[in-house]
Length: 187
Length: 399
Image (cartoon, rainbow over all chains, first blue to last red; front, side, top):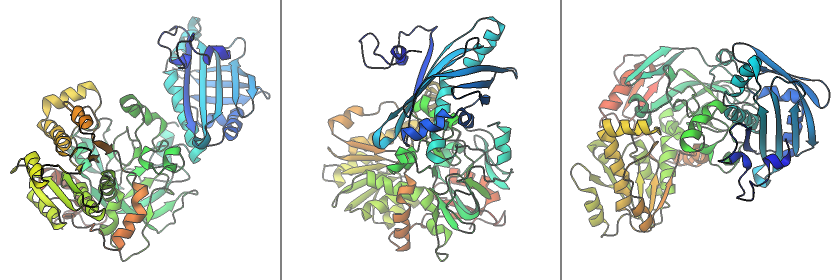
């Protein structure tokens, strides 16, 4: 993922992000979601930089195991009780500002993404996630395509909302009336 | 525990359900001592609110005693608290501006999608009021889990103040107060209030406290108009008099300086086109109540203010947008930022500046809640407000 892919103006027509383009290639799986979090950028970056923290607010994650400073193995729930796993590598790291990653060679789902942290003054920090992925072919590809077609944009939006809840309030909001009901909901 | 649960249109039951318990660090568990049925609960009762699920526990006006507090709650076991119907985190940008009912965090992440689709932004988290406002269990129960209990509940240390006096800090008193505040009342103003239900009657009192010279209250239930008159309002019974003509004559042809719509739309919460069609096809009430806000806009003086605490949820036909613009009206509305008003209104109650108990007409056991819903729905003139008392013997005559 290059900066020009996700940041630049669309051929000089307007100032809207390219991810909001009406004429984007429908086969090009690129999405972006932004949320404003009432905490300093550095604090948010630091939390996100440790991949083991991400499990606490991301849905459908089975585990994220660090391999070294920049690499981690992601295992995600897939339909029919299966799991999909890949290695993720941080390719660009600007402390307090952004983290860019992509899946290592040979991943079931080739994917890349970037999380940006931009100071928003008294409102806190604008956190923007940009995700790009290539739907693969083959049987595993179909499985994975199904997984990612579970409204990846909605999934990303919900993950960012939970990140915001956790960072602003110290907990993730739930309507579960007691811990037993919470466990039944599998969250 | 026992709780009043929703099962469908005109099907409310008293069920035995799982007790609540602490889930998150800022939670508290409250043993409910008093809980009221709100006019807006009747919209649920009438089946107009989408995203209700069978078994949902109702109730958003309640108070009680803290029986358990999470490690990050500011409450202590044994404290007596009134709980706002709006659940607010206290930490987001909106909460920091005291726009508590715009809290971005209290509604669980998955439930926020519904409001975003329908309104462009997620709804707040509310107790006992459908899944688009969070799917939280309500307070018409023996016990309730209160999230973010360090932000909402107001501790009532004075045991000599009975529940009845402070219970309505949970919703309708702050709602009536904010309605009057949104009307931006200036000394000498004439304020017209459409609808003399509990919110309207609190708006009447609030308008006078804010300096209104005259308040004109509009309804068709004689008992409710009588209550408005008790607080010093002049009244118009819309079944007997033409409202616009009466207001024009009573204000020397100027129209009221500010108007407060406390009527609302039975079909609130609906935002899909098919639901609108259903409203059009099936409800006379819907048409009538659209008529109310239309009348408000036509009667208010040029350059005046319209405050709309009434709950609307969908689209309306023939909304007089042209009149709003051409007359230069200001329209203010929204769910109440309850936490903002708790302390000052508690003080006003303690100093007897506001009568907060006048509208209670009946007290019943929690188990008799289903009967309470039916009575409140069918006999609005005599049942102005029902308070349910968990622990009171069931089947006793309403007192």
